[in-house]
Image (cartoon, rainbow, N blue to C red; front, top):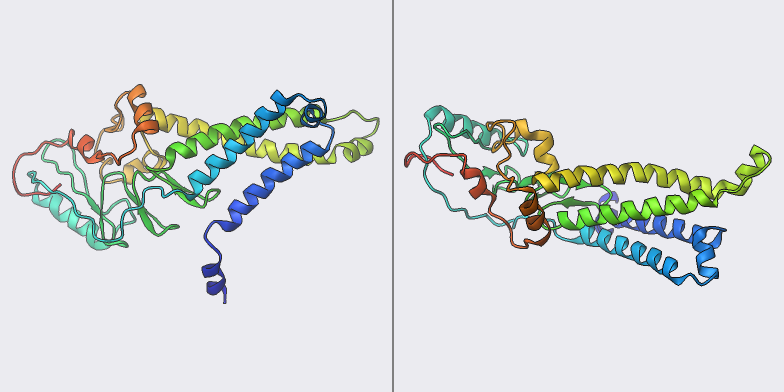
Length: 296
């Protein structure tokens, strides 16, 4: 019975509905009570009112774009890759085969060694049975392989990957601005009362809204700072947290980021480069082809 219900209800419907109702609930509560937003509407301060409505609308739009957009799923049919040969040692080859036979955990499917006697081999997903381009990881929640996998966001009920990461960052930026502005409106709405009981009675709604917004602000602003760092350095959360386990990074120097092309170029590619990028080319700069017996 439970499986049938889950099949009927689209994935993410509950959390997206909750997000929408929470946003509208806070907005309506500030419109019908004595706040700066309510005063702006009554006194005809349309610039103030319009700016808030536009920010609220844009935040909602980018939330749904990030949550509904394909994050960069690999096609389920076998993924054909171009291979070229590089000299590798027999020990490296055997260890790589053992990793594939064990199936791995999405990070140890194949190996990457450094320049000396090294090779780069595309990882094979033991679940989807397809070969993954560099920076791709299988998501256990979505049950799909995602290009430039960053993380699975429970608030979006979607992965953050190569196609929607820019929209997720813009959503975080707009959401941070909206929350901080709403916090300021709520703070100014508190009224002074003679007793604690009277104060709680007069400010109960504002206190509840303020607590919700304060928690949301800590989470969203922290995420914005983290993903801004990832943006400028051209990293993903998965790579940053699990570098020592990821096959194409674990044998490189800790200080080396093979995807870093300079802060400005990283930003331009993050926001404006639409086609899928060939990350293998960037990693191969740190591998030296020496023969014809291995595979990349």
